[in-house]
Image 1 (cartoon, one colour):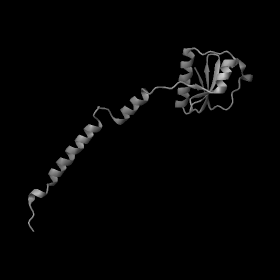
Image 2 (cartoon, one colour):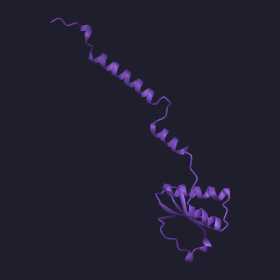
Image 3 (cartoon, rainbow, N blue to C red):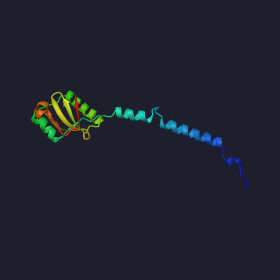
Image 4 (cartoon, helix red, strand yellow):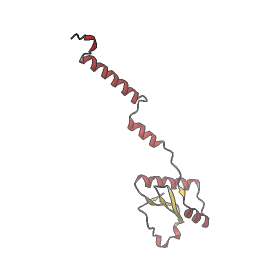
Length: 133
């Protein structure tokens, strides 16, 4: 049997080829110079926060009581809802000035809205957290 040395690579040659290929793959994966964790954090930081939606019931309550939210109050309501969601609260009471909102953080929806003075004995039920803004 006639075997030529040109058909086989030495261990050193294989090792060099493998390491060079591995370096190329690593450069491609981090072409932007950021780790996966850094990219993920940047994506989460720049994510657009959707404003809360109002259920039909909540919208009717605001309309019936002639309550109009200012831009600043809406911003605080959105911020409070976001903070509650980050803490794992599912149904939260968000207090903004003299207004009380029950918000489902999973659906990002205001379920009901009222002025704090309207509540009987200041009791809120069916919530698992509160945020005062």
